[in-house]
Length: 247
Image 1 (cartoon, one colour):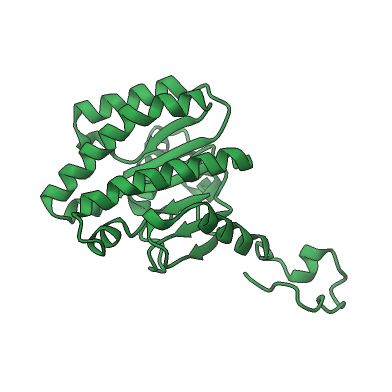
Image 2 (cartoon, one colour):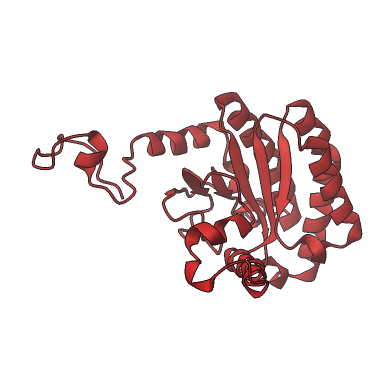
């Protein structure tokens, strides 16, 4: 599962609060979603916390976001470890500075052997950046004479992506009413089911999550096949009345 947590600032503005108050409230929604995924046995959850485009926001808000990230690491990582959650961060984290970078590394090392939910935080991440850095790594293999350029395929690029070794998401959720993926996991979302909700992220509680799961459960995932093929019917047999035809 992959999630864009949108609407923190609007949630705060609607209540006459500073935007950072919405981000703080959003941390509570993250905690609730992680708990729900653990209870349901969902093995992978990836959250878009800070995009490479978010540096364009006001300097004060960016600074407060990074401080909140650091505080959340200090407060939540031990709880995640106790719950057997494996924590990891993807993205170009070098720009965050040595203090935050060190805390991220400590959290990853502490939880790396846990066998429960894998919680991935995308921070200073962009899908185009991800594909570009994977191409750079692959080009070094070609330059070293270890790979014929003519043999390059999607399968040869995939191991160099940030999410290498993690299954592609089955479900993508975006809160806040926007209906776009905003440069998030561009490679991995090729066949992911998309779910958009007007609920702002601090409002996304267990009941909202259940609605998203119910929508996903009603969909037929075909991966390029016909509905009849998925249902195991002969090609000339009409589809069952009422069956889903979602791509």
